[in-house]
Figure (cartoon, rainbow, N blue to C red):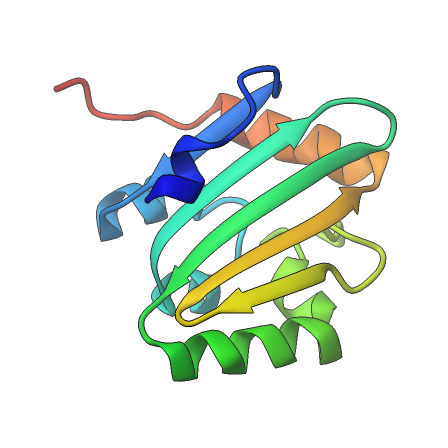
Length: 130
């Protein structure tokens, strides 16, 4: 959880989802369901410079799933980083992936069209007020 607390306060967008319902609500419109189902925690940090830059933190179900995700993100980035229901990918290149146990940290540049769609979809997210 410390890595999630270390998101830069100057980032334009910072999201953290800890529960299955939050992961679906906050990330379901921008990441494939298979990605959501393989994780316990997700965090996203965006800088809206040109190009937009993203840091995605993932706590996988276990270290084996993290290793599988890390390899698959390198070998099949389109499978994991295509925005659902669109032809836009969050990254044109395989992301830089760092793995430590069940934790993954991804860094990538987001193409302009994908960044616009990502922001449009995030703007429509409705979260429950506690």
